[in-house]
Image (cartoon, rainbow, N blue to C red; front, side, top):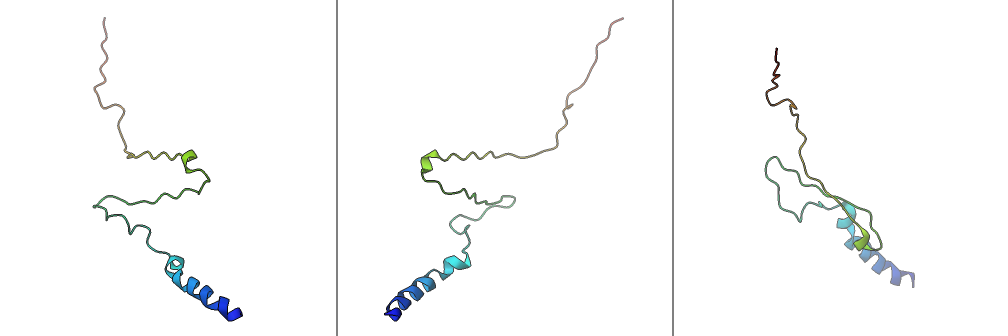
Length: 77
């Protein structure tokens, strides 16, 4: 009786080995161009997916000069 359960259990374990080893989660997506990065965002599972909201803000951080214009002072005598 024990052997009857052992084979299906072993078969299920062996069939899940690639998932246990960890597959590349980027495989379904195309390769990026130079200077770009592919990212995966993992959010916790919730019971109702309609209640889940994710906001992704894409931008670039740059050093800027706040005084890019001419600073002139008009004085009168």
